[in-house]
Amino acid sequence: MVNSLTRPSLLALTVAFSTLAAAPGFAAEQMDHAAMGHGSMQGMDHSAMDHSNMNHGAVDTPTKASRTPIPLLTDADRNAAFPPLAGHQVHDSAINGFLLLDQLEYQDADEGSTLAWDASGWMGGDINRLWMRSEGERTNGVTEDAELQLLYGRAIGPWWDVVAGVRQDFKPESPQTWAAFGVQGMALYSFEAEATAFIGENGQSAARLEGEYDILLTNRLILQPMAEANFYGKNDPERGVGSGLANTEVGLRLRYEIVRQFAPYIGVTWSRSYGKTADLIRDEGDDVDEARFVAGIRMWF
Image (cartoon, rainbow, N blue to C red; front, side):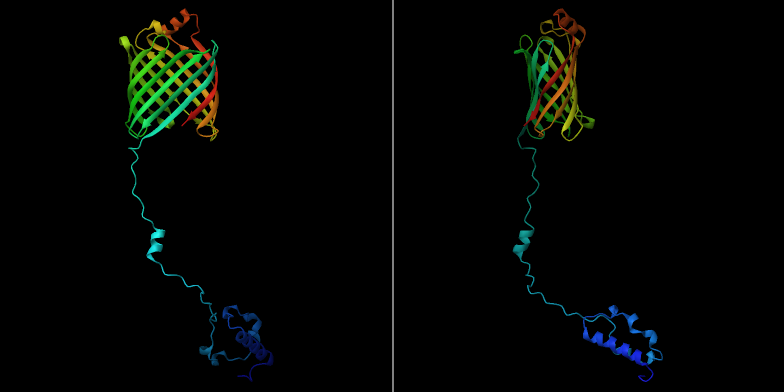
């Protein structure tokens, strides 16, 4: 067979096998068969070659043994990786508290500078709570209106409470005590609402509806519209209220939450009296409607 090979073909075959023997890690797949000149091996009888002794696969590359053996897993390792977990704790019996000073503001009123406040808070668990509400205003250093409510509240759903308790009016005129009951909570689209009925002395009755909504202009800039309406069952000239719809107030406040617990704001409010209440106000020489510029702070703890 050697005699049948031409000299160039024999030389190319010898160089190829010499290169393979010199590099034991060299894979047969990486050999450049185009450079071996198979086309020039004319007359070579491939059928007579013994392919069984030729290793066409990849040459085994010796591997380096790991110097640091992997330690065996112990019970201490398992305990450190999977510590025992405590069971779920029920928090409905814990006593918590919350205080919101929703409005503490200066108002530019027709009678002069007015300081107004509106605060609420609670203490208790997830189901039963003691609620506090307070609102009022002072004009030129004189308290024109002030009230305090202490209520027991019980949750009737994830977003609603029923409340019952007492309301004490300190102004206007002489103090007056009311029994109070109602509902409060969050309606659709995060609309906060309160509806409270009152039974007072000498058969007097009243009702109050309140609602407010937060519009997030940004994560910290919030526009809050609000509305309030007061109704009375009969005339009470001493305190300047008449039967039916007595007055309404709407407001629009824009606050910036420096932190979630503290936010300054500015806004405007507009109030109007109706029916017999408006007649009593006109008799005193005052206006039945009034718009005010307000500026204040909102805080919660």
